Structures are given as structure tokens and as C-alpha cells.
Length: 326
Ligand code: DGY
Image 1 (tube, rainbow, N blue to C red):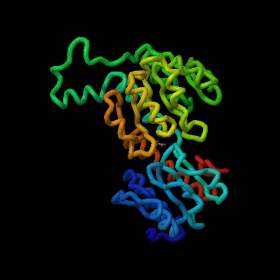
Image 2: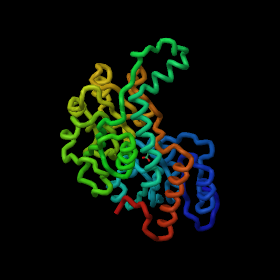
Image 3: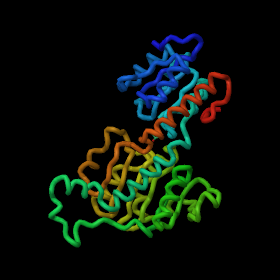
Image 4: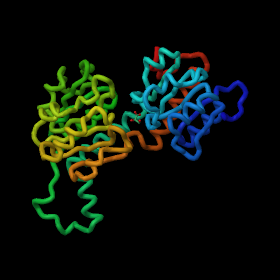
């Protein structure tokens, strides 16, 4: 049951948030917090939703298909603590008159930083290097083995040139990389930073020593980085994904990494995460992270405050700043 608060909107918060965020939520709403950060399943969230007017949930909640049609009529808004909203169907929300908001902008830098971390970590063998030191195998190094791959001066292809893609491009410029990108349309010249636009994804791929996936997961992008796409990358290319796991075809990526067609991959996101394809664990040329693109205190706090700003605006009768629904 939500804590008492006369006339305050009743908000169910599915995960533990940053302390400053929780304090503000507790003041602004009749909130049900999750102090133990217990993972609630779909049925529990649906059941608890009955006593609430709004949900503050995350892309890490396991909502399953057709979550929104199953919501009780009391729910009027869902504020997702994420920029990605592929876990929620906007048409279903619109059909039910439920507002949906997300948290764009505040996690751009943190996520772009992780894209660079993955690119460098994958290229220079961060995971096998770390393991060699921990396993006391440093003595095995010679002047010619093990070896990583150059990043500086190489060509970077960015799939999706939104805020995060552009932030990746700005950082990669510092490494002297030539930037190529594929997006639905070219971005304005000052944002493209001299990057070369490719209207067709397939046309960009031969120019990518590194491919960075930075687009949203949509019906159009799901499975886009498949065997045919990977075959167009230069021999020894590197794939980096900080967007969503389902944009990449795991079978195709694992085959290309195993055969040596691709040199390495750096992955922060996975289809079905946290239950990732176990074959990744056995590959030495992958650098794996547990979806931490936005995981810094400043960023997670800013995301939480954005959720509150959106909920406050909605319940005040104003248009939430990050409204996704009509
Ligand atoms: C986002 O905000 O979409 C991040 O991937 C965390 O879900």
C-alpha cells in the first residue's frame, strides 16, 4: 500500500533509487518505494499497480509482452527510468490513455563514455589482459604476443546518430578516428562534426574498422547487425554495443568472433539480459559489461529527478517534458 499523503498521487517505484531521488519522491508523492531493491515480477507489479495512479519503473523490470493492456484502470502514467523505451508499447499506452515518459539527455555522456571504454577495452584486450595479471600469467607475454588492435586513426561507423551517437563521435574525434554514420536522415552539419553520412547501412559497413551500435531498438533495427551486415565489415573489425542486445544477432556475432572474421567485440547490452548467451563467456576476444552505460551516481540521480519532473508535470495538469505518448 502506498504511504499516506492527502491528495498526493500514489506512485509505485519498482526499484531502489538514489537516496536524493527517493527523498524527493517520498516528499512529492504517496509513494511505495522498494528499499530492499527486491526484484518484482510482472504479476507483482500488476497487482501492486491497483493501489496506484502512476508507475516509476525501469528497463530492467521484467514486464513481459502486453504489460500495458494488463494494467489496472487506476494507472494514468508510466515514467520509465531509462532513455530506451522498447520495454513499453507506446501504441498500447496511447490506446489505453496512459502517458509514458522517459529520461533523454541526462545519460548521454555516461553512455558514450562506456562506448569508448568498450571500444578501447575490446581492441586492446582489456578482459584477457586483466585475466593474465590476476592469474599470474604476466610472464607469458613476449614482444609479439599477446597483441591488441589499434584504435587511433581508425575508422568508426556509428549506427544511430542521436544524442549518444553524436557524443561517441565527439570522443572518437579525440582519437583521430574518421567517423561514418548511418541514421534515418543526416544530422545537421555542426552535429555531424564532419562525419560521413550513409543513407544505406550496408554502404557504411565496409568503412568501419569499429562499428558502434547507438540506435534505439525498434522493429526496424532489431536484428539489423546480422550475418549479412557483419560480412560487409572489413576483416578484423570490432563491434561495440551500448544500445540494446536485440539489435545484434548473437549467432552471427559469435560465429564471426569465433572464426576470427571479427577481431573483438565490446558489449554492455544483451538479448535476454541478464541471462546472456553463454557462448560469450567462453570467448577471449569479447569485453563484457553488465549494462552499466548510465551507472554513475550523477547520471542515475539525474535520471531519477527527470522521472519526478515528468510525474509532477503530469499530475499538475501540464505536459511532461519527456512525454512519448500523444
Ligand atoms: C537506458 O536508459 O535506456 C539504459 O539503457 C538503461 O536502461
